[in-house]
Length: 137
Image (cartoon, rainbow, N blue to C red; front, side, top):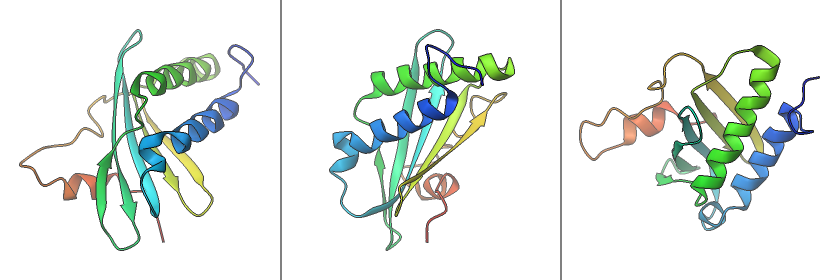
């Protein structure tokens, strides 16, 4: 089991999930059933976070974590842990959080930093929001 600063990959993912769920932007959303967050990391320290929350009735809205700098820092730490395990660095992550649970699932992209970038053809983000939507009941 490879570790970075005493933490395993699993530990860091659990910590990230708890941080996201505790952020005010997320706690202010009532009755969400799913969250999707796209994390894009740049080499070094920077990056971006964007995403959506989903309701059972089919509605959705844009969201983020409210603590973008902290979120980016946590994901850089996760990438470093994974690099120790695999020798590869991913550039983008798609985070799915679902309720009840909550459960967390993260998909990683190693080659295409534009994989989960929205293709904006207007102000309607429905197609993009649906393309990154987590599996919710």
